[in-house]
Amino acid sequence: MDSLNKLSFLGDCIEMNKVQTKETLIALLDAIRTNGLDNVSLLSEKAGIPIETARYMIWHELPGHFVSFDVDIDCESLGLRRWMIEFTPSESSSTGRRIHNGILGGGAGVVYAARVVPGNSYFAFLAIPLGDHYKLWMELEQLSKAGVIHSYSLKEIRLMRSISLNPSFYSFRESQWSFSWEDVEKYEQEIKQVVGDHLSFSEESKTLQVDYKDILILREFERRIPKSISGLAKSLHQDPFNIRYHYNQHARYAIRNYRIKVIPKKPQSRCKFVFLFGQEGGDDLARARSTALSLPFTDSEWMMEKEYGWSVSCPGEYANELLQHVSRKFARIKGNLRFRMLDSASEFRATIPWQFFDSEAGKWNYAPSVSTIGPYAGFQELKNMCKYEVEGRCFQSQSNPRACAISSCPFVTR
Image 1 (spheres, rainbow, N blue to C red):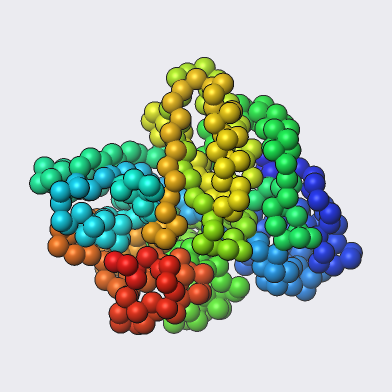
Image 2: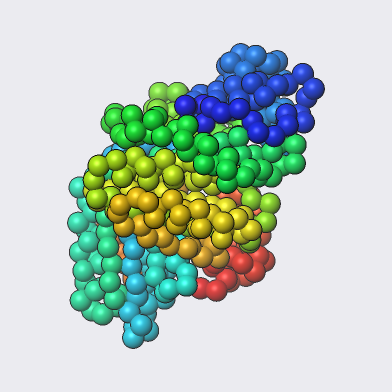
């Protein structure tokens, strides 16, 4: 792992195999983060364990401890730029809820969205083809002038990266978080110098020449990382040799790294926060980042022109202590800190906006459509974005989104 995650475990060794050590597990997680999961031979070599042991740990033991993986896609290498949008529907507008469906249903290029609680506002990340954001801005301006939305902000994200699990704060023996806030304080002191020396935390992107198959491959990796390229080809109903070629020559280079994450045991009790910090200068940004990255539950960070942001996902029982800790730390940092608590019932993640890729022309064709009378996205598109579908826990009807068997599914109430 990078220098921010290479710390010794606080708890006992993982109860996987008696011959495994703490160092072996860290080496395996590090190898996965930097090399992916498609070459188990390479992972076993770097971790110093047999191939079958590595394969068993990855696909059986780690998931059994609620540890999983997802990919961090370099959007800019695909010709996309991330944007952050916040908006509040007009209270007097009868179409405000429908507008929410239209914007966050995929028609604007959303990659992540959730409703903010307790206020009636919305928060989302979008991936928009470079130079085409003005099209969305024109749509939002029209809605604002028509009185459909009360206010909005659309901000460009210059740098963004995902944050992997810090094993120092997780007990693999008990399969749960295990730390004290004193441990977090000590970790913050350890990473302060590293954070200060690496404020530009995103590597320069190289533009890739991709086609529609490459986009579909990346989409599948975002939905559910395949165990093999042959399995990926089967899910795409394509020739294995052709898919392997596209993956090796193009798609794999758009995957910046693999993120190690903890799957919540009780998703309904999970709390999601977004913090936004406007720095005033000096070393304020470095101090803010040190605090953000020292938190056990931080899963991503990003930089905008005037704000630094990070997202946190934690079990509900840690929410109050988390907010108290952050408030106490930022009371000594100059700048403006604001946070948003996100409604998990309305939260969903989408893949890269493949619907805007013109397969015949081989380029992005961005035409955002924000409907004032109903959802823009079709049911299948929404279903592909649903977190339950991505996690393989979807029991919805194939034709009616209101027939979902999961009562907390956001589509049931729409």
